[in-house]
Image (cartoon, rainbow, N blue to C red):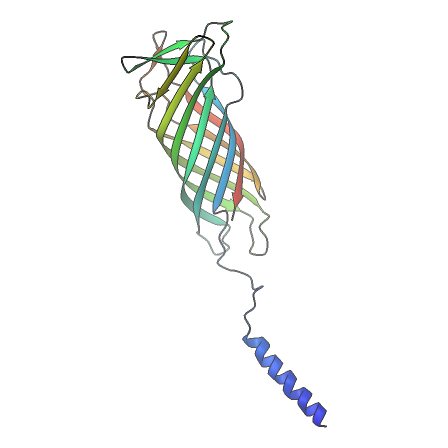
Length: 228
């Protein structure tokens, strides 16, 4: 009998104790998604002047943080805003040189051998997007469609040309638009998602080649990886 009483007291105490311990596996009804992102895309130049071509692979890299703000009870619709960094490179046949600190633009003649001709743009990005997803609190694997608008500030620009006899390095080109903006779309499942961005204003604000304005804008497509 004493054993039974002791067992009853122990079980009662254990029951009370277990009710006081937090349930660490409880569903988080206030969860947020996709707070960090890393993007790797391929850059293409649109509206190229006659005679301007791209060559080699021209990649873009981006990284940033977004604040996910659900706007409905199910939390599968949200607005997100954030800040990030991007490096966009363009391998093409426009040679940028300088004369009395004034940028000059020429195309590389066919058959000319050169080692490097690359334009690099470093920017601080401010994206804002609308999010739709099939997420639930129990899993991080879901379908998503995110679309938004991104404004970028070019804080450092560099163009570099090298061949066996000549080398040009131009930084802080005043002809490049410091503020660039465009729209984008991300679609996918789980971590890996397809991303496309279209620039709405030209890369150059005041540049000419062969007497024609350079009004090229950027179309980027590739992959973006979302991380909590």
